Image 1: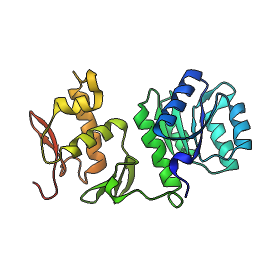
Image 2: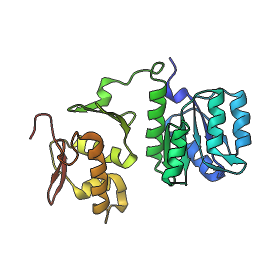
Image 3: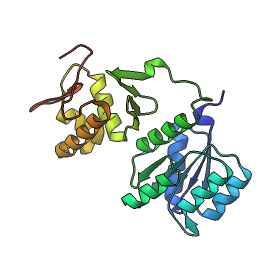
Length: 239
């Protein structure tokens, strides 16, 4: 049975340094078959001769754009596509998703977030042919299931993917579930040596995390605020 890291991924970006960096990120994460192109023409030559399992596309390219390239790709094979672009306007995001892209990440990005988003769309697309994740790789909070391997949160309403910062926060809280995790500790887990001054930003990420894991984010049941100290993720059955 084919594994996710055996899949062939095409990365298209006209910035040669960024292209190399993305390739290195994917290789370090375990992906073994990474193809690169710096123009639409090079990308066309690759997917004309090479079966692909997924693609990461920039929007602004020297001889065209990623939107047109996506349509050409899908005319050959309906593979999952992730846009990675400096264009962060809602119109561009909606256009990409409306054309059939599976996800859209803006630059600059965190390597962990790229890997989480890519593996999430690959697992969704190739669920029937990929080995199933082990049960120990999931956590359940009521009706919410957290898939640690892919960074996906499943609720009765559907699925969402955790960002890299949300993933780091939730992992830290889960490792210390039932206990208070201080604001400083959470900032350190996400921003490492540059944790000072991120308290307000932390509150924003906590709010977004609650929107993904709580049935009623404004009345949290699992991720609780301990005023003046930090936050805690409740154990099962704990008030």
